[in-house]
Image 1: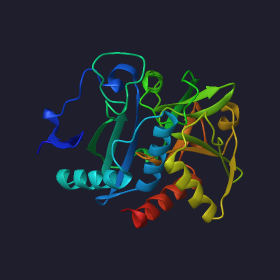
Image 2: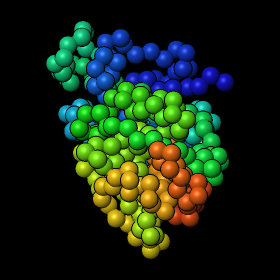
Image 3: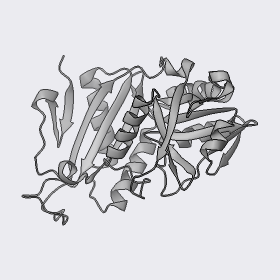
Amino acid sequence: MSRIVYVNGEYLPEGEAKVSVFDRGFLFADGVYEVTSVLDGRLIDFEGHARRLERSLSELDMAAPVTMDELLEIHRELLRRNELVEGMVYLQVTRGAAADRDFAFPDPEAVPSSLVLFSQAKSLVANPAAKAGIKVISIDDQRWTRRDIKTVQLLYPSLGKMMAKAAGADDAWMVEDGQVTEGTSNNAYIVKDGRIITRQLGHEILHGITRAAVLRFAREAQMQVEERAFTIDEAQSADEAFITSASTFVLPVVNIDGVALGGGRPGRVATRLREIYIDESRKAAI
């Protein structure tokens, strides 16, 4: 069965889906996106993703193409048409397609924002990396400074993942002014003496929806949480480490720049948080 995607009001077979060559997402990376996980045919933390989308649009003075209620219905219709049980829904909003290429923004009254969504089937719960853990390397953070806006400017994170692959690792943690910001597509954490440490919110990192949920669950479980920056040296001396994202939930990190953590095995805190996150998310899915 051909996958059905959504493009500006139409549900189409993916082979028939098209956007203009003048779309500003294509020409200028002038767009934002969200990825919402799907478990048991239902959406995980849709409200959080919708709120962040609204914030990203506002920060870039970009018009929302539909209401958030309408967006929820589009998500649900995609799940239905694609019979998606487990995986993700990707959405992207761009500033639309003007008549020609121009750095200046087009008039939003004349050029509406563009909206594209598609689903991806993927096994999220039975991820082998949850049991084996992942290896990360550190790289310089060379992105623009507004990482709190979830834009489609993902070239450097893509380069970072390729650097990790070339080094025989799974991902990269980016470092700025000697301190870890985040992973290429995830938030980064270490655990020391039972205390979970992760960088505080700011323009330097994405305000992860999974991050917010995991920290809430950790506090509800009486775990200690400290939101502050940390260095690679501190991470290498930690008891354990992990990452969070919508597509990976909670994944343990067992090696940082060649230094094994916890004997190279997933830690107790990361393992427990993954269990809690999956259980609680399933309960709250819509």
